[in-house]
Image (tube, rainbow, N blue to C red):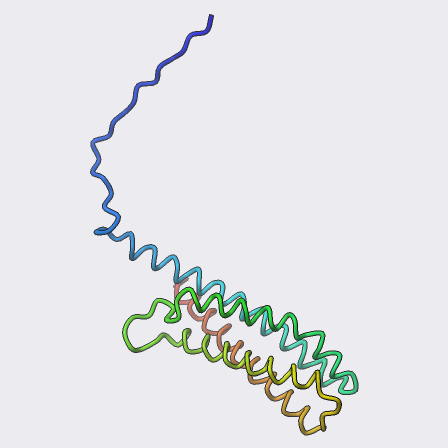
Length: 165
């Protein structure tokens, strides 16, 4: 025969948690902002690495520039979509009022620059023959977007150092 042990229910006399009046919304906002910043930093790292590799390959082998650019188009499109999703979470990155945090401004610049670069690269891939001058412009555009991604990397490393201190 089996015996069942009844466990007594312990009722606590603690106050119920007020989800709307307490600091929980502020904590949720902090968590969302930190997660958004981490995702943006990850995208900026991947994008900087990808653009650095693209830039070096374009400089090394100008004769195969079109196939190289075609090879990098899809990863850059994926990065642009991911960046757009991260910005959709909160375009102000937790900032309040009219003044946006610099991280939000850099993220917007990166999104716009990457969209422009994708347009330029897709035109470069579909065109039959681009002059060396136009390839210089493509290289310049790649370097400009790479610089913006680098700014985001530095911002994230600065904020990590500040948080650690």
